[in-house]
Amino acid sequence: MAPMSTPRTAVVTGASSGIGAATARALAAEGFHVVCAARRAERIAALAEEIGGTAVTCDVTDAGDVAVLAETVAGLREGAGDGSLDVLVNNAGGAFGSAPVAQADVEQWRAMYEVNVIGLVQVTRALLPALLRARDQAGIICNVGSTAGRIAYEGGGGYTAAKHGTQVVTETLRLELFDQPVRVTEVAPGMVRTDEFALVRFGGDREKAAEVYAGVAEPLVAEDVADAITWVVTRPRHVNVDELVIRPRAQAAQHKVHRVHD
Image 1: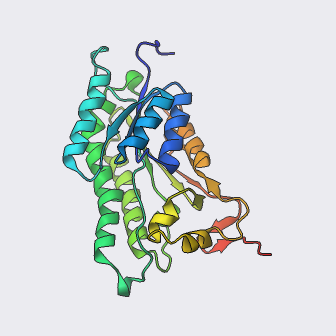
Image 2: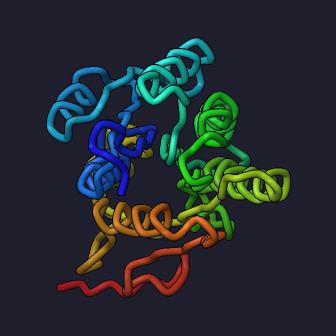
């Protein structure tokens, strides 16, 4: 076990709520010093204080913010002299809108691609040198994808295109880094009920957001996905879980969901 003076370090993007916040808590419970990165400064400051981590206000689509994130990570390990990072969880993402392709809001599509793909690439590129210096050559990148990155569905064109991008970037990284001391994984959740995901997608329409989970007794919650992420990134250094698809029992596929109505 690493000495207490130099704990393992992890970065979690999109850490201000949902899966990101739950993952930050789970990794902290495993002994990591967690860098909580997100746009909402007050939320991540509170989270970092709660778990003894570090908060970095960061919009992953902003190159300047990402540079500050990388500088902060390097500074955490200055005492050890290696500027290393053990775990990167690229969780920042989002779905905006549900219009069919023929009525697509191109700006929403662009925003989804920017955060789910470009943001992931920018953060990975900036932090890869630190990951390659991880102790015991056990660095790992975990990209949070989606079952939407595996199958298309009506009204989800922009999001499925972006999440297919997340998956392909993950696969490409694994091929390109095959001879380097870093692992590349993806955790792809299905139906997850969080406070904000569906609400953001439907522009704050609570009724539409609630319909997503209507009649589903036990959708996944953020802690379920955080548990999966934590398991993936804490495997022995020779073990790479290429991808882990996680769904609630009620969801057999995107279109096959068991719902019980009164």
